[in-house]
Length: 279
Image 1 (cartoon, rainbow, N blue to C red):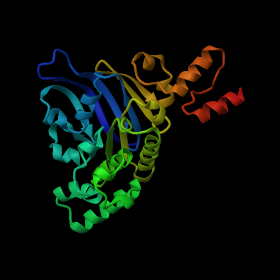
Image 2: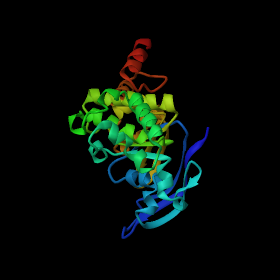
Image 3: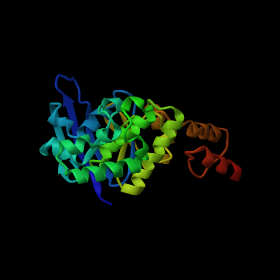
Image 4: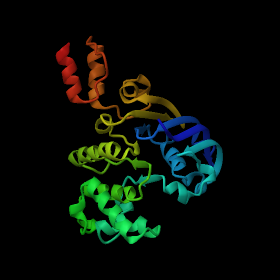
């Protein structure tokens, strides 16, 4: 598979900081993976994301060492406008990036600013609305939308630019459980239909663990765990790092301590139910 992100012995310290925000990071992410980046507040997640979209070092100055590559481009030597064509970023609060008078105008905003032909803008906007299943909202104003709808509009605006990487910063934090569940289905659909790489920073791992290929756990500026979702979330080091281990995994660990043995970690209630019935 193609490595869409490659990080080599990367460290970064903000100006005036007494220690690096992240250090000695080695990480590769394949094209088409869904990867959760987890860790307690202050562990370095935000700095890592800023390194992916070029905000570091182009907008945040500091001491930078090592290499970060996005689709074979060295971030430190590539203009941020070029990186933006490869990396789309959806903020935690979608209202921070929805500001036009209607949904379709908001989705078209980035395309218009980049000088795309009118016919192509129309095609890309329609395609993005179709993928996110929001075509019925095209003429609605942002203030008329629910939080879940706003999140989809924000994602559609990014997808219209056709990035290879989509970064979602705590996408379910403002959503009710039903809207959050629907959003997770959307994320999985993006991977299967577009083959896009999705990086998710999130604390509500109960919902996301079933769709993620990998989990990267950070602690005190370093990557301490990186591997398949089942393997990482059942690791004691993940518990110690203070991330939100899914309740279904916590239940399974409790059952194991009581003498039940499972051949594989279950990450959904349905999986655990089947495993218990087989014992």
